Structures are given as C-alpha cells and as structure tokens.
Amino acid sequence: MNGTEPDIEPSVALLVGGRRLTTRQLEVLSAVHNEGSQNRAAALLGISTSVLHRYISQAEGKVGRALVVTSPGGSELNELGMKVAMEYEALEARMRRGGSTVVGCTIVTEELLLNALTKIDREGACELIISDDARNLKDFQAGMMDLLVLDDPLYLYDLEGVSWQEVAADRLLHVDNGPRYGRFMYGAQRIGFRHLETRGVRFEVEGAFRSLSALQRSGRSFFVNESLALRKGLALRSATDPSWLEHRINAVYRTESEFVRKLVSALRQEGRRV
Image (tube, rainbow, N blue to C red; front, side, top):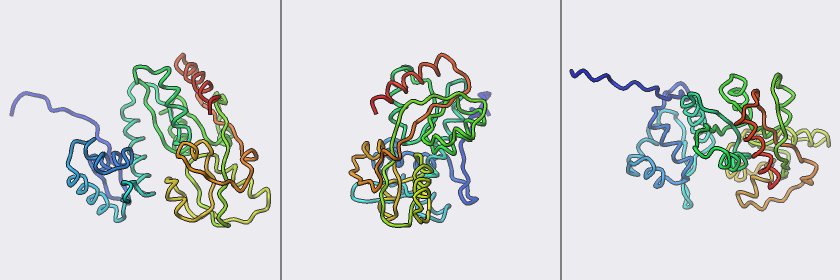
C-alpha cells in the first residue's frame, strides 16, 4: 500500500421501488433526458451506444418497468424515466451547492430564468434546479434554495415570512378532448381546474404527466401554459378564451441580497418580452 490518501466524494443514489440505481445509470438517464438521443447521450458521456443501452437495460431491470421510449425522431424518457432523471438532477444540484446561490424553476419558466441568469451570472456560479412547483417549494422551505420562480400563484397563500414579486404573466390553453383530464405537472393547473368547477363542468383527472408529448398522445383533455406551447411550436386550439386563464409568474425569496435584486430585475425585464 502507498501513502496516498484515497479520494472521498459524496455519491448520488436514488431508490426506485426499493431498488438502488447506480450513479452511472442515473447519469445515463439524465443524458438521454437532456439530449433527446441515445447516440448524443453516449457521446456526451464518452461511452459507446451499446454500453449506454446496457446501462438503460440494467436500470429498467431494477425498476421492472420501461424508462425510455425510442422513435424514428430520437429517444425520450417516459413519465417514470423523466421523474427519475429530474429527481437525480435536482439531488445532484443540491449536493454541489456549497456556498453558491441556488435558484429553481419549472420547464415553463426555464427559458425566462436562463435568459435572466445569462445577463447577471456571467461566471455561471449560480446553481439551477428545474423541477415542479411542489418539489421546488419543499426545497425552498427547507432552506436549500435561495430564489424560486413559481408557475402557480396560488402557492403564495401557503407561504409565510417570504418576499415575492411578479416577474411575468402567462395564460393557460385549454385542450378539450372530453371529461377525462390529464394533469400536466407544470404550470398553474389549479387555475384551470377551478375554472371548470366554477362553470359547473363535470370532469375527472386521470393521472399526472411530466411529458407534454405523452399527454397529447394520451387523448385526455389538459391545460398547458401558452408560453411553453409556443416554445415547442405547438399550434393548440384553446376551448376556453386564454385571457380568462391569465395568471402571474412570481419570484419568491427570503433574503434580498444584491444578487437576488439583480436577478429579480432581470426576470422582470425578460418577463415583459414574453
């Protein structure tokens, strides 16, 4: 034995259905999630496609369910795969935090926040967590996040001892395929469903979806933010006038540091362009 001290590093692990996925298996799922292609994911990780396939098969074998869907247009994670990948990415970001500023958002406000950070975080020192409002709120309330961009303004009623500012406005589109609805995990969904209740519309929510394409394929009715639909190039016809489903996007924080002040200002500037 030599006298060199071994490296000691924390390692991210997740239990899915009681089975532990290795860090490498989680990295592979995350790469597929971000690249939308198994070939590009393999190149990003510096491994062959066959090795990447093996990691995916191992992960699916442990979970006992498929995690990746492949089509002629590329590969994407299914609902469970996306949930695992995003949980891993959020956990990894929290472990990397150190003394850096951590901010959170969802896929609805991702571009808004990225554009704002590009203006004020030139060194890329800020840690970004992208998840759903409910999960981000848990991290924020646990003190693991410094600023949170909330899709759903109704969450503000549940918060105490925080400051918040409106930074943008958005609207929901209502895709009506009948009384069976899917709940998209992002956006002010409660505003959409409360609108149906106010109108006395009978409906049933059947399942939550993280993938918008999977939600569309399901044939269920749903609500989705207009800004997200436009970014994805979707021409969706709304059964409800979107102006009735307009709502505010809010930045929530506890300490108004110089960085937070600059970020909120940049968010408001970007929000006016949405």
